[in-house]
Image (cartoon, rainbow, N blue to C red; front, side, top):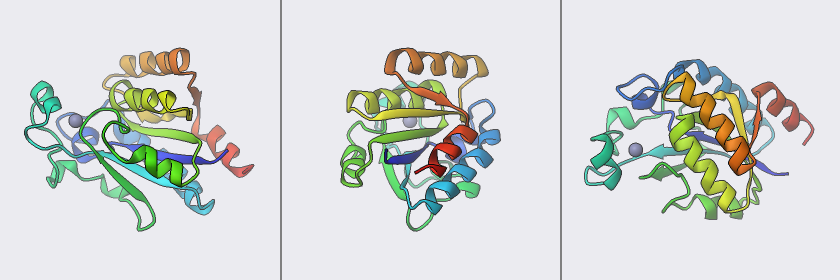
Length: 181
Ligand code: ZN
């Protein structure tokens, strides 16, 4: 197994801003710990960040948010990407859609994605679908993702487990998986 850590949409707007996910700040230290473990194993960390143009189709539905280059489109400072981390900018929920994420992961030899970030029931869910469609093993970090609400978070975890065969695991379990690599 060669996993990559995906840090999905940990941007100001979705963590502390207008469109914040419920409990999003609580997952910051969890993601930071996982990121450290991936770094120490020399495994890739990939940020997938909403970065919209004002005319994006999705913006018609949600209104302007995470417009590229704006303050609210920044990764929260606690999780700022390091120089060896990858950043993929996206314009849809699914981080695979119309981005080079799949090419990047394949060229890195990645076969497993470990999903963290927000929102469990929107971008995490759709990115899990994108990964499943392309044949990646999907691990969702239960305490490393947050949903629009706690209820929709739980619903989405269950959906990903049932429909995409995603493994929903606690961060401690993921850390001990990494230890064995
Ligand atoms: Zn968006």
